[in-house]
Image (cartoon, rainbow, N blue to C red; front, side, top):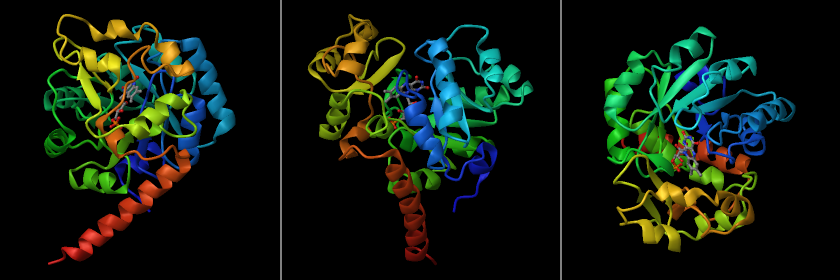
Length: 311
Ligand SMILES: Cc1cc2nc3c(=O)[nH]c(=O)nc-3n(C[C@H](O)[C@H](O)[C@H](O)COP(=O)(O)O)c2cc1C
């Protein structure tokens, strides 16, 4: 179906990556993604490396397909993280939230394929110079940590894709075949899905968060902490609404009670990270259904457009 640099480099059928997300990108979700033919990712941003090691071990029981690990550099400063990944037999790593020169060489010399997540053209060029195999180019509509100087996927993705030779994966705003086809038109060869994966049946967070995504309008995400790095895109709640224009506080201080949010479903306990695409998510579905429909619709839409606008 899909045959491009991403499917070949990653050894997957579908050029779709599940986003790394602290505590959420664990084996239940990632194995469902890998088993559906895409790339499941295990997070390290929780910093709980003992738990992560167990999650990687579980992946081997749950799937025989490829999966990867994200090194979220701002959250894992352990210099042993490269050995940790390599010793656990991981062949694909995305690095994010940090300097691409830090781990790329060591990972690549161990035979690992490395993609770096970038929020600007400048960061993209720096990552390419550091020798990464590819880029995840993430626009500011995506959920989670962001560059405070925000730029949308619509502008950033074609800009970066036109200036680099390495394969590019688009992130921020993608969830279905129509948006995936758009990513291809903008120069990407794959997409990374975050918020829509939070709202799947296999996602391990509390159902209240999933239902909040389903209930959200397209205006119900907020970029907090623009006055200081890192900015973070979250779902609109009473707590996050009050923080939207508050430049006196670090919104990240509101993450202290994250366990009550993630696992007990108290939506006001902390910041529910989430993207603007929440406004397009209408139900909680199984991962395989989301990915199969996304891939099939993408190919159908590309085919229809080629037919419709043939010269
Ligand atoms: C709940 C949540 C947690 C996230 N945590 C991380 C993380 O630990 N590391 C990272 O690189 N990106 C993280 N992100 C960003 C995602 O990797 C992804 O790029 C983004 O969600 C894509 O945009 P979308 O939400 O529109 O799909 C997170 C996003 C969400 C929604």
